[in-house]
View (cartoon, one colour):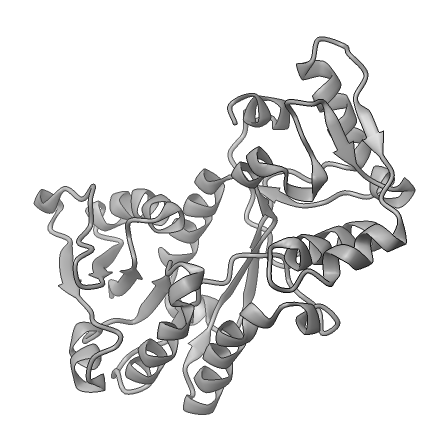
Length: 288
């Protein structure tokens, strides 16, 4: 029996990538796709001729209306932005009352964080609250863990600066790998998972990591892209890391958490969904 998948928030980076990969599966009648959009944000690039059902969902409205918007859904994925993550809680409440609903993929596409990360990441509370309520109400959760998004390196993520041919890394980080993902890989991975029987993915964790470069790999890639000019390596001291972790109002703490795991080399990614062949880190950086 073909199952019904709901995609919430189809217009952002994650939502549009997921939509691209869910549409062929819908067209092949391997799933029924329902696109959920918030008021005033209808899907931008959706061929209505494909027979995809589009429903408006007001996550700040009455729970009965939210329930109606998710009627008949067996699996759902949220691609809400961080600023709207708290609205997932109302979605979970509605899904808990939806007959036949099996699993929910929350908008939590990051490395698998550990307990000592959360004290630095107050913005994670709505993410955690979503999952606490899901557990209380018996709503199944499927996690999809990723690495750093390749586009974030355009803005100096992990202390890198391709334009200046510079990276920040200590001795451990030069040896250890850190995870990176492309948006296309995430979209393909989500499409892969949601094409499966929801009962086969509920309560499980999966991962999509496109590249696993060490600090030395960054150096080699940057040097290559600068026609052999040596890449500057700035040592990250323990004091530097602590300053990042203390930046709880900006993005510093989140980057600090990633850099600390890179230093430790302790990340594990279960249920890996591989990327397509023929892509390279050098090519992706060149296209930033």
